[in-house]
Length: 308
Ligand code: UDP
Ligand code: MG
Image 1 (tube, rainbow, N blue to C red):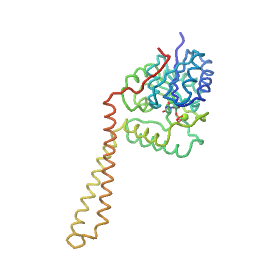
Image 2: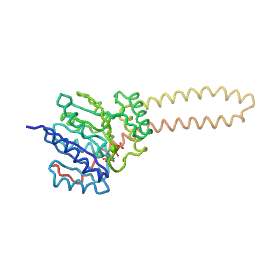
Image 3: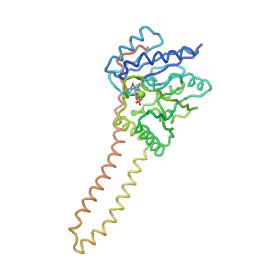
Image 4: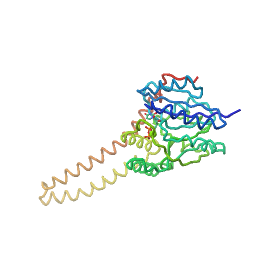
């Protein structure tokens, strides 16, 4: 019996990329001794993406789809793919050709050698905008410093997972999903391979800087409570500084210079006000996570699928 491999491709408004990606993946997979299917997860696209996928499905038995009722985000789209797949190995990749299908044989080879997780690391690409590279480096440095997991910079959502890993992932009920961290955290036999990112064939990146910032904050707060501890230290430091300020205020008062202290009072209020707001923000972020988690809403809602 041939082993079965599922390739999960989340797509959000990728109309013109659907055919290109499907053909490229099939050309590679047809040379390999596996039964496979490609699962397109349509993440609430507002263009013709879903029509294109359905058209492909109707004439190609290798293609399946899951379609969401609205946009739920890339990480939730991946979850839907994991939840719905029953294959021996599941590979996730982007729908814009930035994750080269030529890497598939290598991922599968390493899996056959007994690895449960084969994850990929993006080689630093000169074509990527400088700001994107630098902010991404900074994110991984902060995350590694603050949390107990160690993520290599450039870790991508392009990876192969063995069935037993997917079975475990399915049980994870965390609201804010950050797969690259979660997968690393799981353990199992993991191995990494580097890849040269392709250029996006068409359309533009769905991740704006604002979204990347939110993604980074989610990632950090999912794997570490150290920001809360930093908040406590900041509180201590500012309390200490303010105690130092008391003798100065007393001396000014008794020497009759009290009124001249206006500027320093304003500066101090602004400084401590800032610190307090920042700390409140950090606490609020964790509270918000708790709030969202407590509602136990589903990660996604499927409006249509051909997987039974
Ligand atoms: N994507 C998605 N839902 C979203 C945003 C993106 O399913 O809300 C998909 C997108 O169609 C693509 C993949 O996730 O297949 C990666 O997104 P993108 O290429 O925009 O990100 P980048 O490569 O710039 O990090
Ligand atoms: Mg991309």
